[in-house]
Amino acid sequence: MFRTGFGRMGGETPDKMRQRMQWLALAFSLFLMVLFVRLWHLQVLQGDKFRALSENNRIAYRVVRSPRGLIYDNQGRLLADNRASFNLYLVKENSTDLNETVRHLARMTDQPYDELREKVRRANPFRPFLIKADVDRNTVAFFEEHRPDFPGVYTQIAPLRNYRIERRGGHVLGYLGEVDGQQLQEVDAYGRELRVVRPFVEKPGNNLHLTIDDALQTKAEELFRDFEGSIVVLDPGDGAILALVSNPPIDPNQFAGGIRSRAWRRLMNDPLKPLENRSTRGQYPPGSIFKIVMAFATLNEKVMRPDELVYCNGSFPFGRRVFADWKEGGHGPIGMVQSLAQSCDVYYYTVGNKLGIERIARYSHMFGLGEPTGYDPGEKGGLVASDEWKRRRFGEKWYPGETISVSIGQGFNLITPMQAANLIATVANGGTLWKPYVVRRVTSPRGEVVYEHLPSPIRRLPIGKEVFDTVREGLREVVNGPRGTAKKAALAEVIVAGKTGTAQAVRLNLTGRKTKPEDLPRKFRDHGWFVAFAPFENPKIAIAILGEHTGKAGSSFAPIARDLIASYLGVPGQPQAVASTPSGARTAPVATSTRQEGNLLED
Image 1 (spheres, rainbow, N blue to C red):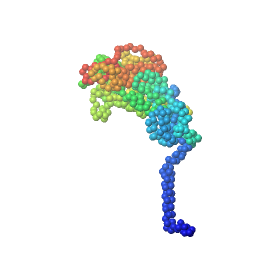
Image 2 (cartoon, rainbow, N blue to C red):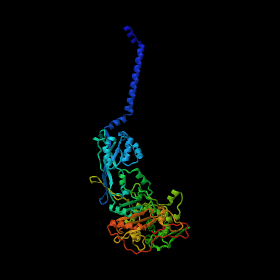
Image 3 (tube, rainbow, N blue to C red):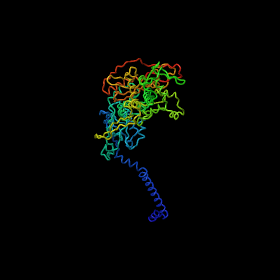
Image 4 (cartoon, rainbow, N blue to C red):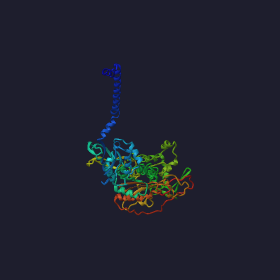
């Protein structure tokens, strides 16, 4: 029986045994194949991921910020340095509950959860993502104490740019981010540093020594705080920028640690556009300061002699139009010097008609108008109108009546405050157009001079000394003459020269009736210009002031220029006593004109 049972158990035929072995071999082969495919998938297709995860258990990236260089003014006064700050970072891949972690981070740093979550979603999962720079000590203490509860979150001390002048000079100093590097560290399960695997050698930035005079910059900001617009102050001897104001101002410190979305949106949506540097990017009609260019063109082209008179009765008929002077009744017989001193429109209507638009455009370009000065890569060039420009822009020819408007700084022409400052600086120094600059030199952290700026002349104007003397005499009379339009700029101990200007933002008041500036929307109010230089015989300072949509005449800004000049030159700020003449805001009625041209306010 035993043999019979054994025979039945082991009595399978060789074919059946072979078939069973084949199935076992097939199953084992399939198992090996699946194992191979899985290993290939893990090691080849996802090898980088798991290698990074493996390394991430012990290796972590840490952001290292090198301190930026220091910034000084022209007297060695510190404008910007660095201070220690605590920054909060998140490494996404190390977080075990990313959504909950982001929720805590948003609450602790006072950020909208949805915005922060979207930023984190786009971040590199293996690199530190900055949640917030310059967090307060309570936030730092909380995350350090609860580090095991928030894997992937860590704090780090870093140098942060610190602007010591608060809201001053933001458009000069800028608002750049920090200089970052990467350091590899070995960390434990809680992210605590064990050792540095690959160090990052910190290299402090070079130091900047600017041409800005901080005392003058402060004074300019204070005097101009109630206006929108710009003040540009230059050294006429080499083009150095002594002060630059663009209002509304910006505080560069709000950008140093990373500006929040809401604050950024407020800046971007502000109708006054505080981020725009009005000094280099604001473009405005030049108004009557353009009469300076017209005076040079008139004398140099011998269109009129300096002592030759034009009779001004308050209007200038041309074709079917009548162009009005700002002064009702006119100025009477007037020559070159007094045409500048009293800003007579009729005089420049007359000489503009004789010069023609092409010569006016040529002299405009000669003085640097219609092109960037070269100070700022983002600088705008303004506009100098000509027949060729109009044909290209509008497909129309130039009409002589348009030349009349251009002659007093209205019409198509546009300039920037930087160009206006360079114009008056060129007049002050006798004919050299300089490229404005703000960096005097660059030094290494050890004090070695890395770069020294050499003043760069753009061109020497081909205009004789006699012409310069006549125009400069007219500008002196603007401030010091009995009929000058800017007597409030006069000083007792220093002779100041200047020119006022009022530029129409739009053509209004076509009926000739007077409209008060305060009754107009801001965007329709006139701009006020004042340019000046001093001392008259040996100029050390040149100023351009632009009051944007103030509705004020350019003469309103003469006291600001006076105080800046007095402060910079170290002289008493009392005005020089000069004989006064009746003046004020007047409307020039036009009885026979179809539209009124010219300024409605006294320059």
